[in-house]
View (cartoon, rainbow, N blue to C red):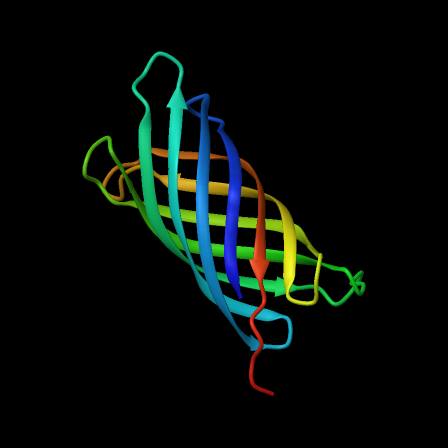
Length: 149
């Protein structure tokens, strides 16, 4: 499965910051309904009265598709990830944790449009106690490549 979130929008509770991300991803189904992969993070964070901050990172991801409530055209899923990120402000590496839920609507047998809602925690500097957290909403797509059976 390859694709990503093309319009991930978020809001930080601590810094009253707004962010926009582009997050390409790839994953491999290790069993029926469970995919393991990684996602790249690139984005912009805007805080009122401060310079804009460019963010980047990588996060290994696991996604579970729920068999309950599935139909021929869609499935609900839950996703979690743990990764590292950095920014144009400073040279520190940050711990990134995320969890979310979403819905994949299949427009063909192998292409799905997705909507998701999640929570992100970003420890601003691993050696200090600063951190941010917030909600994000994502819109994207996935292409499900054929596998071996």
